[in-house]
Length: 100
Figure: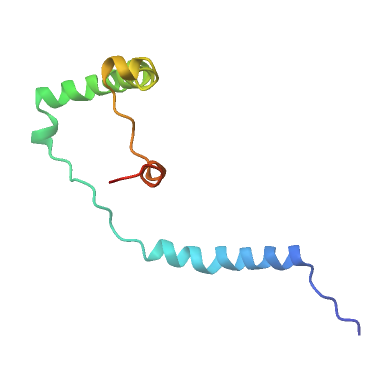
């Protein structure tokens, strides 16, 4: 009787299936409860909290559409010199600079 060897792709497929069938359920069963904050109706019903829920998307929009592009522009010359922006620290810069 002739024995056949499995191809490399077939072996990797079988190993992947074994991984999914045995290890993934084990990981799922061993998961623990997360560090979520419990819902407190007294805090969540505060008028300032309700305002924060409404204003948070506005703040994110202002950050992405106005503040981040402004920061990027100020980091470029000649604006960096005009506004006194510091260059971000990079590990490679420390090696290239000679220190007394």
